[in-house]
Image (tube, rainbow, N blue to C red; front, side, top):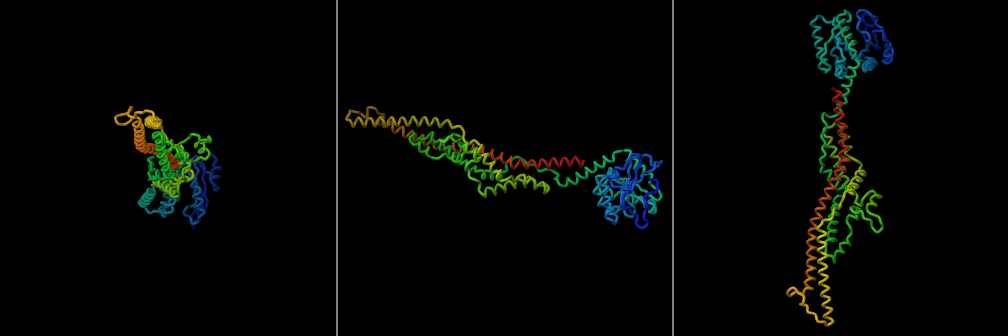
Length: 471
C-alpha cells in the first residue's frame, strides 16, 4: 500500500484478525460489513496506486497459526474471495498445510490465483532465490493448481513490490475476477460431486429378462390360464363338431374360462356377466401366487436391478435396485389386470361349421334309416306284405345301409374332429400365450424396466451436466 499499516509482533509475527485496504472512492463498507472485517484502511491515492481503484485487499490471519480461530477466520473469508494471493517464505514454502489443505483443493482456481515468494532478502544470493522460486513453482504445479509465475518480493527492502502491485492492477483492470472465481467454484464442485457418479452409464436394453419373465408368468397364473384356454377350445370343438346325439354331454362340463371369470362376457340367467363381476371385484378368480412364486419375483426383480446398476456408485446402484423392486401387491394387481385384459378367445374355425353341418347330415341319414327300419318292422308286425330287398344296395337293405352309414360317418367325423381339436387347441394356446407374454412384458416394463431406466437416465443427465460444469 506504500505505507506502514500492520503492526508486527517481534515475538511471533502473526495476524490475529483480518484487515482490509480499500482503493478508490467507491464505498466498500457494506461489503466489509458482510465479510465481518472491522479493521479497514482507505489507501491514499498516489502514483504507486494508480490503476488499483476498486480493489479491496484483505490480509487474512495465518492459516498455519497455532490459534484455531485464526484458521477459521481465514477459511471463512477465503470462501468469499475473488482472487487468492498466496504469500510464502523461504522457510515454509513447502509446508504441507499450504499444499494439502489449500492448493490441492483449490486446484481448479488457477485462473484466480497468484503465488508470491516473500522475504527473498533472507536468501544469500540470486541463485538461491531462483532455486527456491523454481522449487515452489514445481510444488504448486504438482498440486494441480497450475503452472504459475512465482513473484519474488521483499517487504522489507521493497524488492518486487512494484511488479506485484502492477500485476494486481492488471487483475483489477480486467474486471473478471468474480466471474473467474465463480467458474472455478463450479469446476471444483463439479469434480467433488462427480465422484458420486460413474464414468459411464450402464446400458439397459428392453430385451426380456428370461428369469423375470418366467417369475411374472408363474405369479400371474399364466399356466393355469393356458390350460383353461386349451380345455375350453376342446370343449367348444366337441360341442360344435361332435356326434349330435352325444353333444349334450359336453354341455354338461363347466366352462373352464368362465370359472376363472375370464373370456366370457355373456350375461347369465341373473343378467350378470363375468365382466361385471370383474368390474366390481377388480380381479379375476385366478389363484393368488404362492409364497414361493412371490419370492421368485422378488429375487428376479432384484437381479434386474443389480445387473442394471453394475458399475454405478453405491447410492446410484441402490436407487436402481429400489426402482426395480415395486410393491408386491401393486405388481400382483397389475399382473391380474394384464391377464384379465388379454383376449383369450378368437374367431371360431370355419371347419367347425363344415363338420357340424356334415354331422347333422349324417345324423339325419341315420335317423331316416332307423325310421325306415322301424316302419318296416311295424308293417311286418301288422302282417302287411313288405319286401325288405325291394330297396337295397346289393345284399344290404337300404334302411340298414342308411342307419349304419350315418352312425359310422358320424363317429369317424367325431374322431377326426377330436384329433383336429387337439391340434387347434395347442395352436390357440400358443396364440394366447404370445398375447399373455406381451401383456406380462408390458407389466414388467411399466413396473420394473421403466423405473430403472428413469434412474439410469437421471444418472446420465447428471454425468453430462457435471462434465459440462467441469469443463
